[in-house]
Length: 329
Image (cartoon, rainbow, N blue to C red):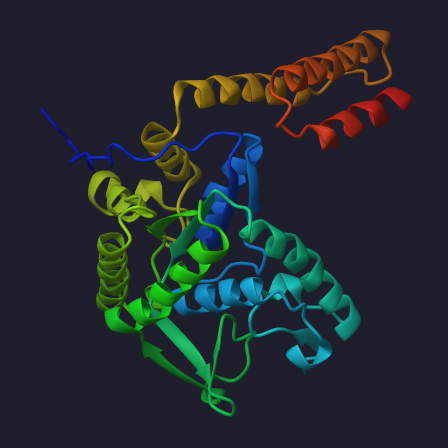
């Protein structure tokens, strides 16, 4: 007897390994998956512009990275005694234009180099609804709580998404021929649109991605995160208390499915060793000043060095520095 309808995972996909460079951009779901990539020591950069929900704003951010020109004060605006960028999440906003630009350009410069060297660009679309600033006609990634009457809001069509992404993919491949693009649609619900409008919005995204797969079969791929949550899990216990975002259990299951689709046995082996080390480092001693704990930290540092000897592409610099700081104390 079956109590669910499992989603058939894609087969024959290119593998993702720890030696691959990965750039992840998009919605809250991109943050969820990106955080798991980072925890497992993949070479990953997640949302250098902050969370972005719609495909057009993600494309604008990628064009900006390809252009390579850092942000200047004229790219910012002040509202509510805070400086913002319409292309960035509020986490980049600051009390002065200098502090805001510093945060923006620090991430921008790193991502600008990454986009020319990544092996995988993973893009998560959340909604096909966009906001356009009336006074300039600029499509914004974040409204930063400005009055709603300053924006026009509409839903992108499949054709508009294609008109944006076909030349973008061509430009990305021209600058970085080895890049592969993996698209997902966020299973996070946009309830403020209404449930029917949310479904229509997701449908636009799904249909546009299918068309991109057909046009670029050698470099464009799709992972069915949306279908796994909606059709296989389909239970409110897999959502957080707000009934919008995913629970930790749902994110873990999606990560498991993702691994089955893209990770090799060698990648899983490395992840197991990283996880064992992370568990050791999470150990909380009763007496941090004891000789036994000092020996334990020394063993942790030795394990990190041994892992780096086996897998020199893994970055444990932060962990090593933390161990050394604890030993000094």
